[in-house]
Length: 130
Image (cartoon, rainbow, N blue to C red; front, side):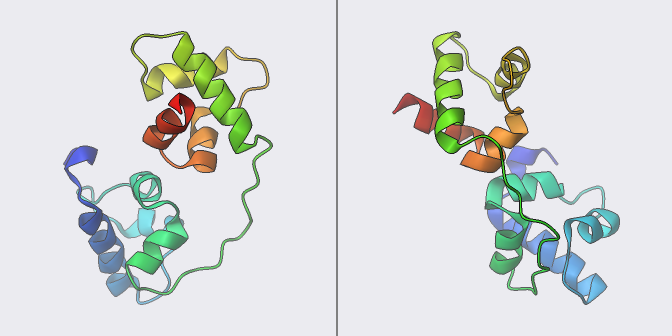
């Protein structure tokens, strides 16, 4: 099933199904180990629902405490400034071309880091155009 075809409720249901199988708090690693090929990826769940912890909270299942706190070297304002520069350089923005463009910028974060800090690609676009 293509990523666009999963509703948020489907993502939550997939986590709940894995929780029922494991009968323990579901980590990203345990989800990836127990999920079927038809289940959404953990990356998609995180991207759409904000974080793994938020996804588990939405699924109303126990939440593992993160093993580390993610701290980016890049601030949200730096990322938005980069995204604004990128948008000024293209007529057809896409996440894939943004990722390639970032690789050519000195000391720029990865596109995934940008999503981790800001949220989603759509949120990056929205904030960079405001």
